[in-house]
Image 1 (cartoon, rainbow, N blue to C red):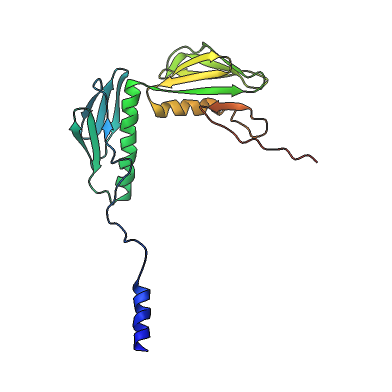
Image 2 (tube, rainbow, N blue to C red):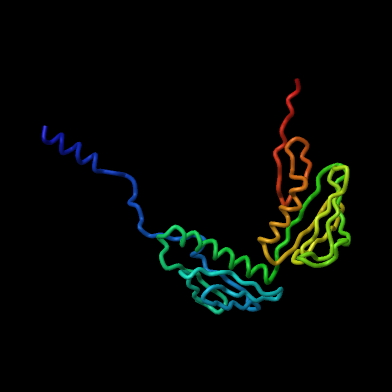
Length: 214
């Protein structure tokens, strides 16, 4: 009887699961950032300045973040205590922001918008309000199936091209601001799932629903 109890206790204490690791790491934050020679990174206690051929921008840094230049064109980002969830999440986010700033100041970002629908078309025209208050002095005039045309003022930091009547190309050095303006234009006619009409951003697709017949 005693032997059986010892065997049962041995089986209960045995576990096939791996031991939990006490090390915390950010898979994105731990990756070093490589930047070309024509980009200059200037750190300060509160931000990192990125200067490139297309301009200058800055990325805010938290007090617990540290930058290390391992090579002349490589920088690594670390945090003081990766076991804290906030520091670990900000670690990966800040690393992504720095990488996007480097790309934005060297190559820039662009995204196409496609107008899908009968009679849908877009054109660039002068803005009657002129330039000022963040406006570039031009606007998008779009026909999107309404009884009237809709107009969207083009910000001064966004470059807009209309290579064809149903295609709009947006360009900007800031990926965040580019996405905000693309979403603002898309809001006029979000893609609908019945006829597949609307404003599509990039390679966006929509699943067409079948209409049930009575």
